Length: 84
Figure 1 (cartoon, rainbow, N blue to C red):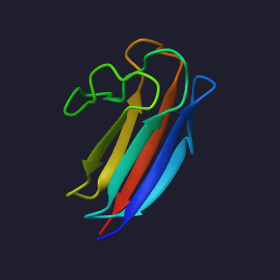
Figure 2 (tube, helix red, strand yellow):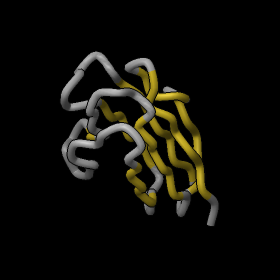
Figure 3 (cartoon, one colour):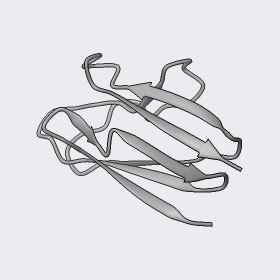
């Protein structure tokens, strides 16, 4: 299993596009001074509100394309592609 970090800073997810293998855990860390969420577009998973310094991790168990956004700031969008 591997781990990948995504930074939330300046109202963006960095990287905004990510390609990973099944079984990878992605960890998002909020570095902004305001709250954000990490929310799947289909609402199948999400972090709830996170403040500066908070982290949220999710392990992707199935191949597919997973678009997500910030529920507080809908213009913040990103996509994770998971391959077998």
